[in-house]
Structure formats: structure tokens, C-alpha cells
Length: 375
Image (tube, rainbow, N blue to C red; front, side, top):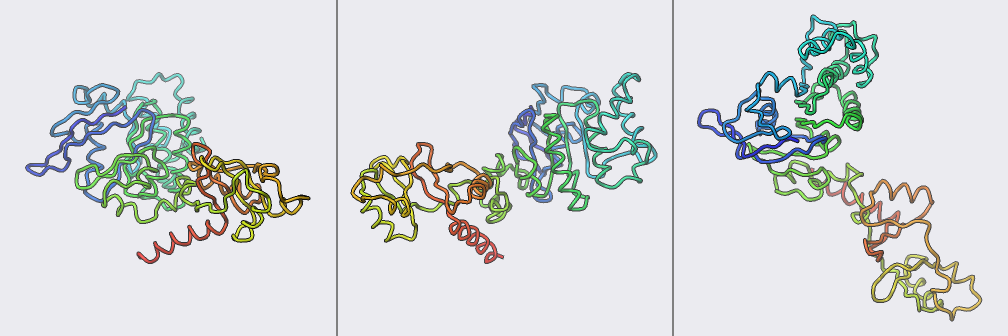
């Protein structure tokens, strides 16, 4: 866990960081993002004392970093930078072995440790005897990550590590970082200028502006509830629609007007169906709106008499959605069951709305149209 307490940074009379206070939970990836000059890299480098603070306190697992020997501190914190920082005159094996030397790692077991790191970051061991220049940019960054992990630090700092890499490789490395984190569970502080990257890899995002923290929250909360106009402007209008994992059923449902009550007669239900676009009714309790079942025109027509209550023939759907279900789950269910609609219930099992194919098209269409109009 990393804690920033009232951190300020001044260069002469100019204050560039203003009273930063926040906590980075253990085992999470936290991205620091913002425009050029906002202070994100300065804040990162204060953790391992590459940049000194002017006032305040930084704690790593409860220990004040400014009461620690800076060399020893840096040896306990992994560090990955944009240019990888690999020594060009050393092979990949010697680049990794050098870190083990600094930590006085026993000679016995070094080969196994290096091989383990190569496997962990998805690199073939044949690359160990090559020089950095003989590797692609993506391979060099993987070596940089392996070097940061090789002594098993609890904290890893990553300063725009993927920004100089081609877009396709960058996406691959982002995926691999998330996958790697599932295994290693490190506390990772990741500086980036790319909001899409931050959303994709982070457990939390710290969005900065001119030395202040504008918002510090989960990607979903920042997308759904931007704290300030600047945050809303920075993330972009309708960006959440590019992140379907954060879109919930309640975001895409429409009002359910095709309702019936358990005591309604089948004749009354058939008349209701004739007056609405849908060929089915949702049966709910009259006063609580708790969901009871579904009935369609075919089910009613199959009955010998239309005088009985709809509760006698209503059926239960194979699946329903709840307001917090993700768009991806809803679409997969609709596709699997070949259903034209999906009922949405709230936390009390009351009818909240309905998702139809037409409402999906209309919802997505309106958001992308809005975005185009803004542009």
C-alpha cells in the first residue's frame, strides 16, 4: 500500500504539486493520467525518491520512504520506463543477471530465476544471449518488466512504458500486463497519457490537472460519474460506450409498458396485446410490481376459454437480466437463447424495464450520433 499525505512540490517559488493526498491499495494497478505538465511523472518519481518532495509524507507499507536509504529503497521497487533502460552492450541474460548481482542473489539458482522471468513475460529463452538492439520494441519492454520483477518487489513503477511502441504491440502488452497481474498481484503505479490505456489496465485511475487531483476512482465510476467538467472533457463524451464491460442493463433498457396483473382475464390480456406493438405481456403484482411471469398471444389463443386469470397460464422466462448486469452478458444471453427481448429486474425483483433489439439499435445509434454531432 502506498500513501501520499499532503504532498507538495516546489521549484523555486512555483508550486507544481498541491497538497496531494491519496492511497493506492496493495495489489492494484493505479494509473496516473493527465495532460502534459500536470505532475503525473513527478508524483511517480517521488515514490522511489528520484524527485524529492517539498513537504508531506509518502509511506510504502507503512514506512516513510524519506526515512529509508534511497539506494535500498530503489532496490525494493521495480521500475519500468519508456526507453526500457537496458544496457545496450550487455546481453539480455547479463541485463537480468546484473539486477541479481545488485541484490546479492546466490549464484546457484540464477539460471533458473532468469528462465522463470522469461517464461513469465512470454519471451523465448533463446533471446537471452541476444543484445537489446536485436529485439523488437515489444520484446525489449517485456525484458524491462522481467527485470523489474526478478527480485520480487512489492511495488512496481511504470512510467509510460508502452508509449513508444506501435499500436498493435501496445494493445498486446496491455493485455499481457493485466494477465500477468492476475498471477503476481503487485502494487503497480502506471503513468500514461492515454485514457483508453488507463481504462483498460487499471483498477483505479488518478486524473490530474495542473498539480491537482481532479478525480481518483475506479474506471467505471470515472466514466459514469465524472467529478468535474474537466474530467468529463478529458475522458470524452460517450467514452463509456467504447467500454462495453462498464455498460449496464439499466443504461440500455426502455420502459416496460406492456404490463398485466395476475388477476387479469385472458380476454382482457388479449385486448391489451392488440393495442400495443409487442405480442406479449409482463405479469406483475399490482401494488409491488414484483415480476410474476410472461404471457404471449399464442399462449392465450391456445386456451379453450378466455375467462380465466392470466396467472393460470403465465410462464417463466429461461433468463432475466438485472439492472447491474453488463451489456456483454445481456447480449450473450440474447444471442444464446435467440430471444428478441430481455426483461430487466431491480434488486427487489421488480420490473425495471426491458431490452429489445430495436432499443439496442436506437440506444447505440443515438450515442454515436451525438458524438458525431459534437465533432
